[in-house]
Image (cartoon, rainbow, N blue to C red; front, side, top):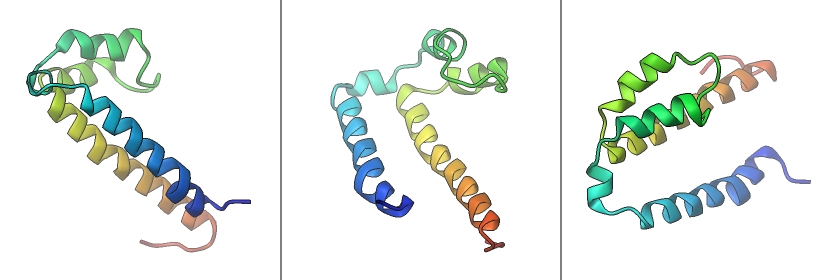
Length: 99
């Protein structure tokens, strides 16, 4: 059986890399520079890409003015930080407190 670190290194991370490569391979420079507030609104309100505890007005205001490329970069950087916080919580629960 695989532990969590092995799973991340062997399965999760390569899958993310593959999906990211496929996503960006199809986007032109013009698409990455485009601003599309309607797409952000649809993702937040209709598609359900954000959970019920998220303030949709705040998310729309924050991402709506960004270019598509900047929004992708922002999500990639901040998403990882969220996992870092989760990992610290689990570490503390296992008896290894502190950063």
